[in-house]
Structures are given as C-alpha cells and as structure tokens.
Amino acid sequence: GITEPSASRLLIYPNPTRDLLTISWNGSASGLPKTLNLYDINGKLLQTWSAQSLKGMGLQQLQLDKHAAGNYLLHVIYADGSLKQKRL
Image (cartoon, rainbow, N blue to C red; front, side, top):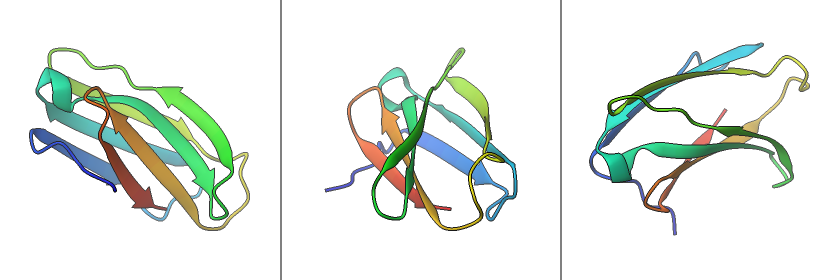
C-alpha cells in the first residue's frame, strides 16, 4: 500500500499545471523525499528526479512542458522507503 511519513509536510502546486510544477517539503531526516517519479496514467515511468534537501527543507521545480497535456501520477519516495502518490 501507499504510506506517507507522518513527520513530512509536502506541498505540490500549481495543480493542474502546464509546464512547471513546484514541490516543497519539510520534515525529519527519515521523512524527507528522496526520489520523485512521474508516470503516465497507464503506469509507464516518464521521468525521475533526485530530491535535494537542506536542513530538513526542500524545494524542487519539475519542468513538465515536454509532456503532452493529460493526467499523470507523481510518486514521491521518501528516505524511509514510504511513498506518496499524487494525481496531476
């Protein structure tokens, strides 16, 4: 199943977006995002980003303009192995 660390705060905006998606977070070391994966609605992995955190906080901007308009899934994989899924 999909579980999310309780010590993490994750913001994803704007949603929907046309080209640039911003993700910001803060939390404890085990509750920080490690990897961001973008999937199409059929589950095909389209792009992967490494999340960078400094002192428990992070901000990542994902350029999505090379992907066609439509529905996507963003998987945020945390340092402790847990996962949060967000539909874009």
